[in-house]
Length: 323
Image 1: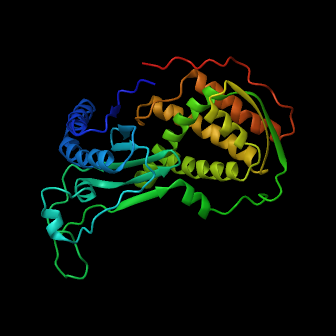
Image 2 (image 1 turned 30 degrees about the horizontal axis):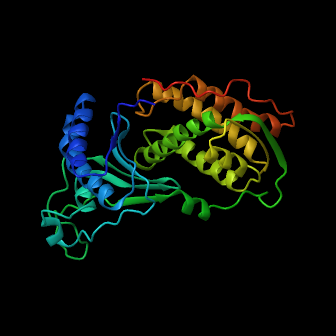
Image 3 (image 1 turned 135 degrees about the horizontal axis):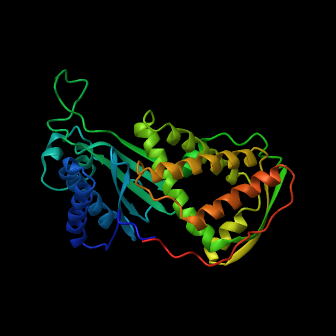
């Protein structure tokens, strides 16, 4: 997919300057030049960290909404970022090596989102930096400014902490996915994971403004937990990893999963309208991805009602990316 808000970078020093120029251009075109200086300085640190401590591929992306834009740096390492002790004023005043301290000073919020294929370190640039020494509640000095604390989200750890579905030890619903288009599904998965992260961060930072984001975030976590407690869906994961065209998947899932998949489909369709209204900077799914989503979710819903499986009704070639 050709996305103008996505910048691939080589893991070399000149990429830092390329990223700085790009983010200023993007925010200016969006009408948010007021955030350009903070975005430029924060992004310099994140790209430097990705080059030194991350793993390629490295991508920079603008996410969020025009009202609350977010700058992201993606890399393939799952090692979480580590912040320095911000109470050490000498480090704050140093000219180099400040890393995430700089990101915190020039953001209203920041953090990292870690999944199996790597991490995204993100921040929402501030119109004005948090200047001055960092607050220490014990020192009794008023008028000091504290940079925004970071928020680290690890999907696997979150799922480990969630309670298992009530029927996890007695998987009662059989779902058969006949002729599932593997490469189309893999492309849809990329879109879905991007949207999942987008909505989680909107819910985290601006949940009152975007109630859809909060409900969808909880539902995507519930769906991931139900997938984890299913049997047979690992065949689909193996087919994606092998690059197959098609696969038949015979699985047993928690009896709550058909209802979850149905409600998730409804909310994802609402999110499409959200994208079309340009309130969300992520692109909506194309026609092929929407067809795949309707069939895939629909099979869980239908077979949860006791209906017979229906095979994938279309071809297996991946549609051309939109420009």
